[in-house]
Length: 269
Image (cartoon, rainbow, N blue to C red; front, side):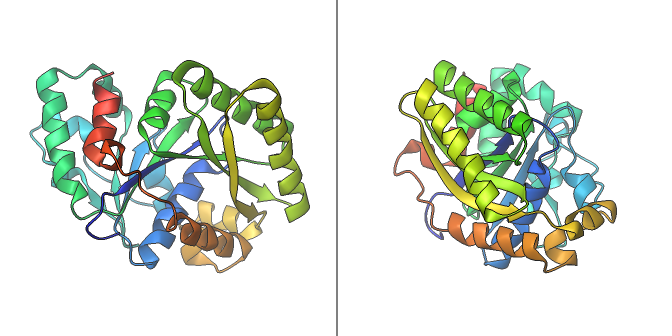
């Protein structure tokens, strides 16, 4: 994607425990393996755990950009897997109450980063809190993760409904995680699609990935190693396939296509 604007997409879910952060981390690795420049923003403000899954301990986060004179380069934390993370920790909550000067400072810092970037992956929190909605509204694409459970389906629908009804967001990509088989995953997607069709008009849903249930994933989490690195099992292969699909997503041909605009939407609401 060299010479073009980077694509900003969120990885999000209606409920916790669906493997959202795990998918985010392993997608970042898989895109990096395809030669893409990737930054993963940990936007799960209260429960930031990208670093935990990676077994890393960044010393700084965006909070330090304003309160300790850190630069974006000080905060950007390179991983051993070919991509960088922008850690949040609890200090990220300060971002929604920044002064105008601080907002402009952040915009300038992030603007410098976009020249050498193909993808900004935004790992949101779960649910429908203000922060989750802010990040999903600012992203260009939204990848909703759900598992084949009734509560996961209900909560994914609730997230889509709030984003559509309150904020006019209409386009969603869907990934079914921990699927026992392809048939179950497709049935789950169909049920979500029917609910949206029936109760919400104008929603576009696309099933872009199915990640099978894989015992290697749990082992990798316990070892604090990404499953795409520690194993080449079915989950790993599925995420690599999803990464290839993502490389075909179009970057909007307008202001939405740059990271500065992402932060502007987020900060100047």
